[in-house]
Length: 118
Image 1 (tube, rainbow, N blue to C red):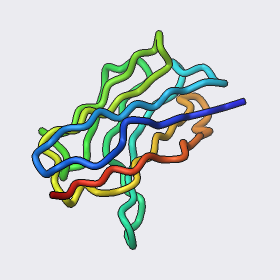
Image 2: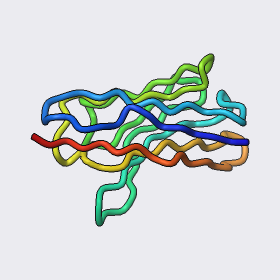
Image 3: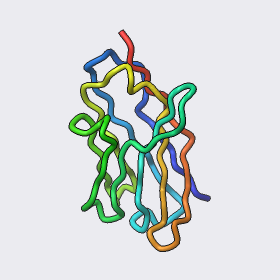
């Protein structure tokens, strides 16, 4: 059974940091590109960051460049999103997504809430 379980969300003050984790199971993690998306209330889901299956390539939305870092540990079947200098505009539900390199089949996690507020 495929599972993507996000954790690490919560309430943080502006300027603070959080580290999100997404633990994967039920598929060959190292064969999947991993991404973080977010969806704020009333807005469409948007791509935040992605990382290639071998971890050598990453890309980021302009709005988070220099503040967020995506990484993965294929031995632990986990992808991370380190978020620094958080802003109220970062408030959203954050989702983990896995996309197969070979056939683009994808899986989504259930999401974790991040709220940036004083």
